[in-house]
Length: 256
Length: 382
Image (cartoon, rainbow over all chains, first blue to last red; front, side, top):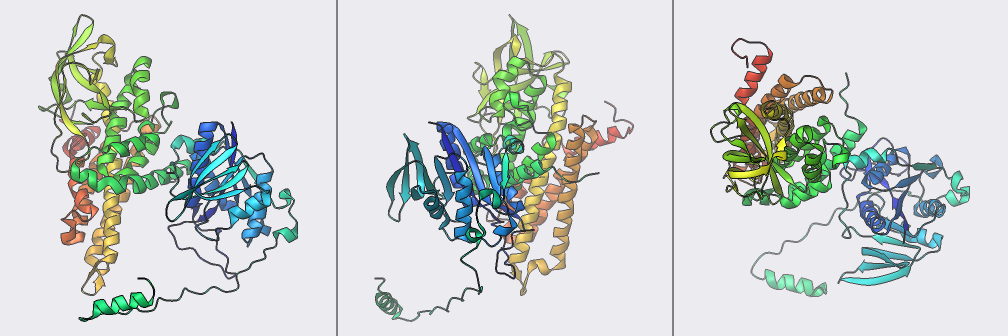
């Protein structure tokens, strides 16, 4: 069974660096070093393995300004077959819901069996986008998969839990979010990097997706940013009765 | 004049850097301590296509030029010289010899699995009685009943006895004064692999003696033309010198980066030690040496990639960068003080790994001779 797999990918500021906020409290995305979100490499690797096994193609869908091509190129170098990049000045400041609308509209433009995404982005961390996309596409979502297998139009995932995992199955098409433990992403080979230049990248604007200005208007905005409060200084327990006092404290806090 | 790498070279350099940091570095200390061949890392490098970099894709390669291969070596050597020399000797020497001089049949049989990192070749030229004096070889290959019969021994051979080593490229006298190269599979009766040497550095690199007692291989195992072994192997060694220069640059860069980090962290007399001019100057000199090394190897590789003469430039790159690496390692240990002398920071390993760079693939003295010869100085004629 040939699979059309879409991977939602995000270009984020260099995970090694310190991200900067602009005066409007939005993350500065232009003119900073960026990369494919490391959390997106896991769903991409899972997608590549699925299509290597079943046949089919991996399409990477991303929304972001022009520098997001760096992330797209990385995904294509790793082996994705094609990409869609939605770039539009009107999308600056898009919140998670607007982003989900844009990505869902872009995904809907082509046939798809499976949409894979990371758990959350390493810059925004809302962790709500994949499920919103599933809702907008009207397909089931299976989340926190540490393993993804496709068999006979059913996707079977192992949902990571605190104690172990749950097995979750749903019919295709579906959206699945993939954890960092799921796969070890491959590194791009030189040949992969050279071939990436030849692969098709479709560039779209919000108008191409037929989204109205209302649908593109964020309903969330950041009105203030404050430094996280410093942790209060802890108490150092000393003396002969230290053990008793620590035990009392833990009992009081209902830890023991 | 253009000092920029191509966009693809930069992307690849970044991918190899990530690989070196995420896959190679976490295992380095253990392999070094146990003097163990890094099989798992080598297999992962095979997946990444590193062993096939400079060969055409029809032979399982990646179509890279020598510049790109050297960039990868620098990134690996920045964290682990043993892994870097394993790659350099397998690809730059052994596989390269098969690529340059092999028949289509030989390339199909040996180069393809070598390019994928599934098979390592041992480039067996050096003997106990002489390294750079290649013409003094005592190993012989005698024609008999349509076969070559090989007798002799080789010393200091990299990748001689790894689990992936399946063939040796043996330089042997096929007649008095006539050197040829012969492919000798490791499973031929009479092929003996010695125990690993106990080395100062490069401890995870597999280095051993090889001995041949009446090893018989088919006539078709001659690699290149009979009697062309000397010139051919020297050509391979010239390219190898550029690669070793990239390796030395990587080691020096590792020393520089570790020194900068330590000089910012370590406090003495109420200040980070990097605030003292004595250390600033050491580290500044190290930076100059790293950049000069890189520029020298890049120029030599660039000349070679354009089919232009590069022999003297390769010798200059190898000479300068290996001596710079030894100095950088010495100063990096000095900057780390007592902590540099124990296996707590990578610089102790860098110190142990550096010295061989001035010896292997042509000693510093031989490089100076090559440079002097290129200047036409008297008494240097071949």
